[in-house]
Length: 184
Image (cartoon, rainbow, N blue to C red):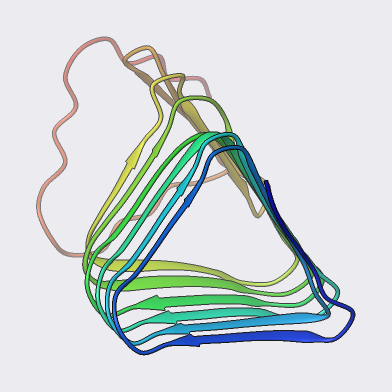
């Protein structure tokens, strides 16, 4: 078990590659969390990782980041979360839950892959930015997106959109195949 309980700010800077292997639980509780890795960063947690802070969480990785968590990754951040990776980002976990009081920004200059065996729950009181050279989110159980009074649900080969209107501008042509249930 790895337990970081800090009453003030946690600031971690690593000059070279960093690799962490924690067999069970990793718990980080600090007033503010700032992590800087000047090369590649790899984290393997056997069971559960939690980040809890009443302020902001900032992470910068100059190389690539690979994170594998056996059961769940849970982050509760009162303000904003910023995660910037110059290389690729790979996250594999059983469950992902992030809650912030402000924005979440996650970017990778190369590929960004998130694979979650169970649910992904994102509760954000501000804006959400997910950017990468390529972005891949794998959700075998399906995915639901609710925003601005509209919903998009994808599950079992079926995509359902519930919105007052759908718009498109320019770009390629959309071709619909299969059964289309239109309700007026």
